[in-house]
Length: 88
Image 1 (cartoon, one colour):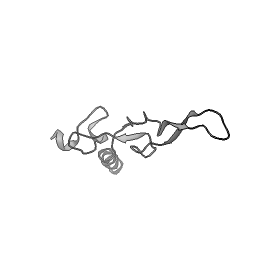
Image 2 (spheres, rainbow, N blue to C red):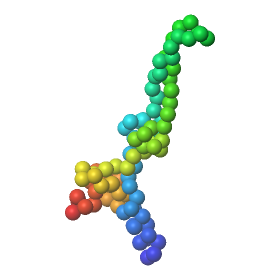
Image 3 (tube, rainbow, N blue to C red):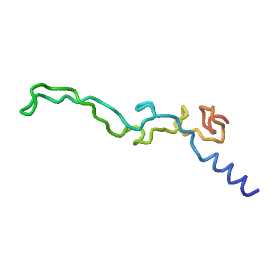
Image 4 (spheres, helix red, strand yellow):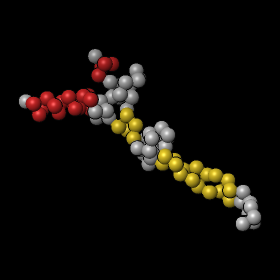
């Protein structure tokens, strides 16, 4: 009974993770930087730069949030979009 109880408690505490909408689950954000003309080159160009996503801190995943702001946990199932408090 101890293993099943621990498994159920773990499911109620583990949030459902969705891909980050800002970086599409990559964890990196790509953007263009203008590199102007200089002494070493005769024309300017666009350079693509990447950096970690600030929304997900580079993880690529965000916890699924309920309308009330609480995290949705695995205890309710994988397809649920409301927390346990709102379901009651």
